[in-house]
Length: 268
Length: 347
Image 1 (tube, each protein chain N blue to C red):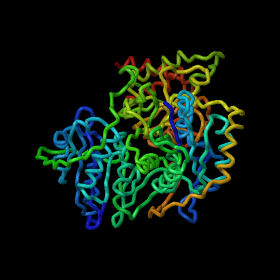
Image 2 (cartoon, each protein chain N blue to C red; image 1 turned 30 degrees about the vertical axis):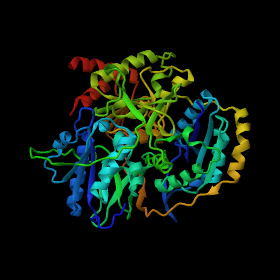
Image 3 (tube, rainbow over the protein chains, first blue to last red; image 1 turned 90 degrees about the vertical axis):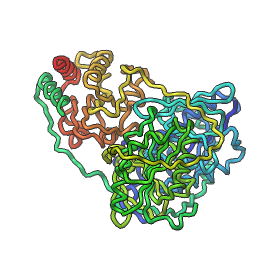
Image 4 (cartoon, each protein chain N blue to C red; image 1 turned 90 degrees about the horizontal axis):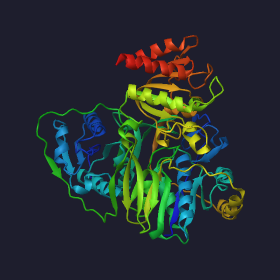
């Protein structure tokens, strides 16, 4: 069956960067946020790669990437992501980072998805990360789904398997390192992805060239998001303060270390 | 929903049963949270129970001194968005509470934001503390446990998903619990839960209730002093250690990803073992890191570990200094082999 897959993916600071919160004019922000190198949100990137894999396996399928972030950051990240898988970009310009309200963000995303021309609801699979690496709330995708009237939702997804009769099986993470297995009758559905099973695709300049036909116009025409005021008030945003007094043990024999560790492990 | 006339801070605690039909531990923790908050704010407390037969698990909250609402039926025996969202929506509307507390369990985390949207409320998740006497303030982490923020919202209803381990589990008494059953209008159910899939018991390496987290870094699969890779030996040592200690296994992303790059791997590792920036942030009283390197991503994985020790060959390892209590500069192969011997001798 052909699918219409929409992937929602934000931009987050590269995980290797050191972050420092500051008080900005509209609440907390990150110091030099605009200068920090960005990456596509890791779990949302998993969703994108899984979506591209599904599109490749189901002829007639289409893939849209809806991404919200500062336009310059979007442009920087798309230079890499666009070389990995084929998609049509729907860019939304927004200066906000992780401290923005998830439900207000979801309202903007839902509006953008509703406006995608040619998107067929009975073929729609709405993908994204189950949580972002910025806000990490696990709220946005559920609310986008609800706003679009989609009441079959799955979170912490590691696998989807399409069946010939149009049904599909989903594996969702639950407690204790287990997966819950569900079978859904048909799209539309929301899938919030964890890591999935696919490796990051290698860069392919040909895919990048093809994607740029839609990526550049989308970036140029990106509308600036307007967020509703939800009354969210931050009292503080700080780095965790605890610094431990580390005992560095350099000249102890492995056997002696093992004895100390065995005692520590066994101690209540 | 019209919230006029709702008490200033009336509280609903959402709880649910597990596969055995008992109230989950995280649910009982939220009952404690609800009781503490209700006392502090002089608010009315209601507890909602989601289960196939809500009267049975509700016995665990006897003595909670709260109104108890229940949703019952075969459709609620399993976790599923369409049915759970409808059930939680019905409980919220029946309780008319301004503040709704729920555990950050996979079951309620799957539906809580959707429910907030349906009842016209706000939501915050991964809450690690609730404070404030005049108003309500909560703490949560941003940027994968790297920035901690305290926030508040004037809007109600406000759903708060609280992390496990923040409150002690409620212990009930022998008194009788009267459960008011709430009717749920279910939409067409197009999703069938067919079961759970888990590794065989002796292959399960993720143990959330373990006292010790053992983190394996990429160093286990790198060349050793003899110039050779000993991934098989590493795997045997780690599995033996996990079996003897009952520890939970965490890993760095680089080690899990090696499989996709054709490098030596530890066959029992999956992405679900990942801790840190792109993985989980587990909570265990103790943690032992071996052969790890790197800074920020690992610090994130260790945020909620109590006592921390590490074995590393690098005395200048940036992340361990100031983050671990003890760092042993040693060969993890030799140390863990000897630890296994000593643990054998103890049995």
